[in-house]
Length: 234
Ligand code: CA
Image (tube, rainbow, N blue to C red; front, side):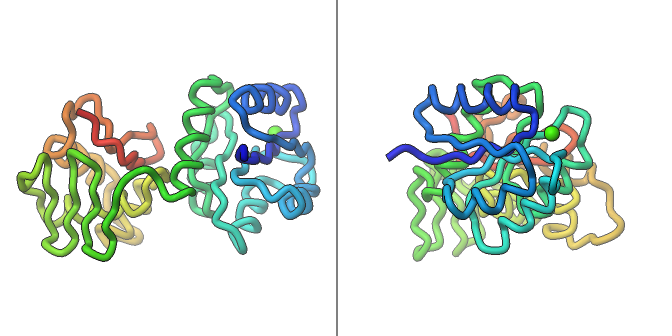
């Protein structure tokens, strides 16, 4: 059975392009053009993923995302314009998983959709949760020993690097903002410099990525934050 995607976008031309690309890729779609009609469609259509525009007539996407999150963990991908970093961060704060900026390339859109659906269905990676081992092939996080191994060898992570990696890995496929990382990994609520996060990510990449300048595991979402892919490359 094909996955169902609810497309929420008030500009009909954009909604049509989205539906066209998604259907060509084998997904079943339904489009909603008014924010006021989203929750009704959400309940009846029961989508596996929601593509959610933020600026909408009726109700805005941020409110809707909050509502969806009250009783569902369905992946929510926000549709945003390139210059709305603030909206992106607010969207992630209210539970969106990732975002696609308009204008988007169909290839990028479909890659994001596939990644979210894969994550929602439990992913393709073997994780022996009971044994406390998160296994990504080349990379392995051993939560019993607080150790990260690359090709079976201890990667020599500092405590902070380990905590950062574990935090991202537990949110695989989701964009995590730098502020959120500062608050949850470093424990800084109101002070602290987000560049601390960037520096630690850079050091971490040197220990776990095949090519730290072209990372596979931890992807940068410019100006916003980081995303763990679970793809250890190599
Ligand atoms: Ca709009």
